Image (spheres, rainbow, N blue to C red):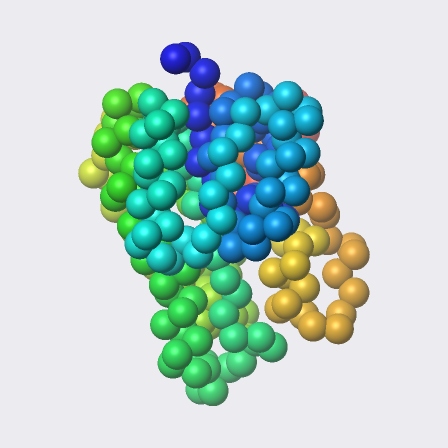
Length: 235
């Protein structure tokens, strides 16, 4: 089978949903997950109506049993070309100062934003090595900049970035990208600013061409910003 396969976590809404739609248009067979089963099945149905081939598996990405189910789906597909670790959590909301950050919430943020992506990468590497595939870890400028209140989320994303950096040095046959999509009009971003109007932020669909370029052109392993990958920036 030569049809490329992509596994996208957190695909029922926001950036994950936009990426799933974009890669389906590019001819990818999709394996998608999300915690909300109803929203995930609705998304899968929309993709199938548009002609996409989709396997939707609901569950919590931090759950080893769910991770195993995703692995079985990729094995059934027979290959994996792109693993997109998009699922994550903001952590405590409203955003607290580190001095007041509940350790339990911090632990949850690291489980979802660092441990789960690494666990999935470990499971999927044999298939990715076989296809000469790629890992795309979604990160944030909060991993690098000091924004008050963003210590928990930023620390977790910084850990994911360094894990990605090391993985890129270790897995020379696999592309490893960690990419900052920028501020987008998503539910997670709204949680960071409860009660505020974030309608001035771009929609997630606006950055899909940047990620499609990254994947289709198989750019070198490294850190990228969607703003630097948009076709307009390189026209």
